[in-house]
Amino acid sequence: MKKTILLTLCFAALWLTSCAQVARDQIRENINLAGSNYLAYRGPQHSLTPAPKGYEPYYISHYGRHGSRYLIGTSDYDKPYYALLHADSLGKLTSKGKETLEKLRLIREEAMGRDGELTLLGAEQHHQIARRMFERFPEVFKGVTDIDAKSTIVIRCILSMENALQELVALNPKLRIRHDASYHDMYYMNDEKSYYAKRRDTPEAREALKAFNDRHTDYSHLMRVLFNDDAYTGAMTDKALGNSLLKLASNVQSTELRRSLSLWDLFAEEEVYNYWLMNNAFWYMYYGPSRETNSAGPYTQVNLLKNIISTADTCVTKPHPGATLRYAHEVDVMPLVCLLDLNHYGQTIDDLEDLDDRGWNNYDIFPMGCNVQFIFYKPRKGNLRDADILVKVLLNEDEATLPIATDRAPYYHWKDVRAYYLRKINSK
Image (tube, rainbow, N blue to C red; front, side):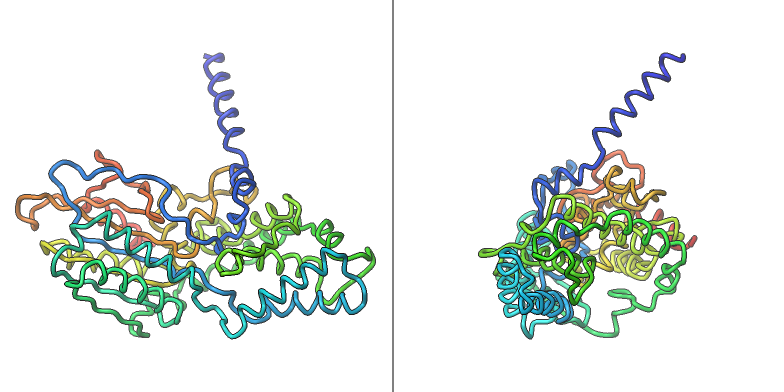
């Protein structure tokens, strides 16, 4: 018995070792992953499981983020640029610092007057997502059918919606499209007044994040790369300048400048990885199922999940209901994924240091253009009102697991899914 227990513990230790810091290896392979929510959308990474025998897709309920954008707030561009410009005027920049200053000038000029706006890549992302949706589930979009699309009132979301709809109507001109962006729908599209939003900012959360960030902040290497004077104290603190430059480095991938320049070469591997760790911890703490906030973050999307369920209720009994498309922000997609507990992202992890070891990686959840798609399947024959409707959920166009028992994974019985989530949101 003791030998069995020892073997079990050894295998568990080996498994944990093999899982440890997978994110570090993935970021080493693709440094853009360190951008967290600035990661440009990569598209599906896996193929889809064929529909169960006798079933076909007939309705899609979608909720997604706008595509790639410029940074929000001119200070994100101005502060690091003027900090290096001032250092240059004092003769404090290294040759690499001077090269970086020129790159910042180009980045700043490209973004001038485009505060938070959709980039060309962001528009193309939604053309591609819509095209794949149409090609993967042609039965949903065939013939004359209705597409109901809604966006938040933010222009990058509206333009993301319009680019997706342009693609769909080009593929099938018979589609009847209704699209809207109104304060009327903001209570579920982007519920900034959620009761749960106010409950996230706890002393415990602030203290845990501060302690975590203190352990993972060290830009001494970066300062040596940029400045020729170890004693130089510039217009920004080392931490503020380091974070600002990493943010800019992260967002270059979303712009046309990605073809001609990069800032990633400024940083040591540890600086990049630690920057991602801190961002990952922040998003987990305030938008994920953190113990310090009593898992309030995911419940900010209660109204959205209710809308997804109630809208599906009105559609699944129709023989050809089409699709419901919604376009919003990562601050909604991430907590929705956690509320749904897709791929176990709704599971609480007690220690922030364990997030990467446990595979809680934000870049897998909410890149630019991220989306959740409920794909509904009906039997090819029989009365829909008595049918066993199936559903599978895609996270960023890849099949996701749900915390619900099923005999047809990755397909789930809609009646079970509906009942499970209604119990969850009504019990809070």
